[in-house]
Image 1 (tube, rainbow, N blue to C red):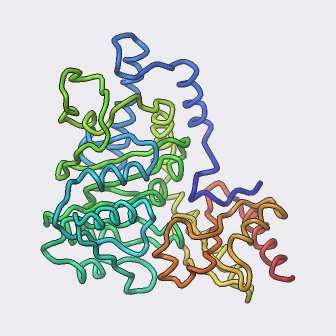
Image 2: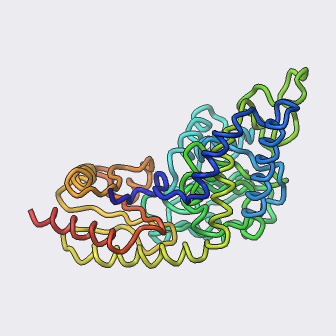
Image 3: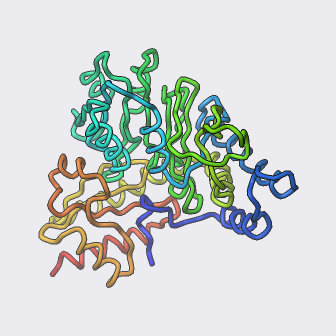
Length: 376
């Protein structure tokens, strides 16, 4: 099958990532950091090395404030529900995924926060001006995704971070689509909290993610349990990472994200350039079909969203799979406000999401298939 659903989960896993996960399962099936025996100590050492690599790669300035999660959604929820913000205003945008929107709606509905949802003034992505225009002294948190998971439009994270840098307001970024595709330097960009998915642009296996934050931020636990430390303390330990990590950690997944970051860290500029070129190519070819409307511009995260006039996005995705052996995604991509903004909230959009490992031959196969479908 031609796999063009990489924004959901990366279809290509480097050999080094797969071998690492398998070897950990085969030779290191022990609870890391919970015992004094060699296997437990080795597992704890592997986890610490992974923390160091992610801390350095994203430059958060604190190894201890790298928290491993099962995915980006869990990381976002731990942060949003653990910041303990009350009687304050939060700014977010129509470009957000439900992993951001639903926790914020829950806080709003409980009367904990006031929510401001901004739209792009340039019709494509959120700029610093959009945030500045919505900002006042009541705002304690700004939450934006690095890039839309619907269109691939990249928000101006560095511009927003520069504006917020000297303020007490916390800046949080959903890096699900950008991590591994765009270099995210948290200190340089002024990002206080970053949530990432391991299984997408970082090439790790499913069940991997991380919450990464700096010393400006204090996050209270939303999960409680064993940490291997302070066993007689009735409360969760007050130090990170134990404060936010409890229970047995997913050692194979953590080792795979460590290996995935090692794989991508020296190639990220190449990845961005390749995805920009391939999205530009696919957009150009699809746009030549007068029955196709494309909603993306060239981007470094590999997303091309489009609709076929008169046919629902779900039907197009099903036909591409069953007839042409091509995997894409149809529907609403868990981003309802973006579809309302784009006026595609009736049928959704087809999303082809490209990996650096997809070839032009595979992209041409999609183009040919769409042209055949629209001929009927």
